[in-house]
Length: 369
Image (cartoon, rainbow, N blue to C red):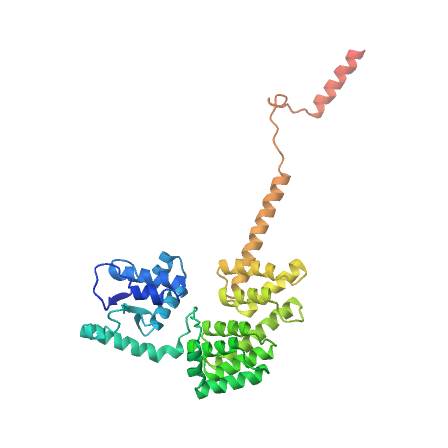
């Protein structure tokens, strides 16, 4: 990957952590995101440090996806301004260090730096709809005053009334907090919130905690339209139906089983045909739908770089050859005669012919006479 350049709106000779960052931004941020932000500041102070995404991931013992998510989070918090190339790779990061005494520092910036910041912000805004949201989304606790202001909006009123009809009951305080969170913080449209509740109610799931879990999952996967949500839910239903069929199950997957399925699809990123093959092999080996056994098969394939059925066939062929070699070696070892070396046969052995035996027999007869 290309090397990332760093710029700052503040000229300092040391790595500076502002009190405002520590007081306001750090407490509500994910710990991993804070760690990555601090190391990015360190990189800014020393241009000789390697600063590619892959190196940052290795240095901080995180995935490249986590590094990217952290940068996007701080970009959303407006503490970073990120410049990206046409292929979406990061080429520069501008720090906008927060402070109490000088929150708006744009007037003090050099003209070229201010231009870079403004350009980067414009590019970020135009691409926001195409970018998945950060994994960690801060969930505020809305005050009564905030609730009053937000619920006076016509769109929010429509959401509240629609959700009440779907839930077939009056909204509880937790329901109101969740709806405002989805609308104001997560950024779901009114139509997407309606589809979210409609989808959960269709599964007979009405609790706020369940609905929030589904919503966060969608946000993490970049689902920000009804069309994307419909496609994702259809794909999910088709996938778990295929797994149920392979395992011979006639029921919805349980909580633990869903975790296994999520791991197979989102951590291992396997296609359904590979997962079905693992399920089929599990049934042949154990005679029962054992998700844990199937997970071991898929984990082994993931570690060995399997991406398609052809890769599985190569592994099977290599395993068959290795098994054949081990069997041949075992058979050879079993049939091989051990050589005995002791004091009774440690000298050359004579070979006797038939004439020798007849001669010895004649001598024995003569001795008897």
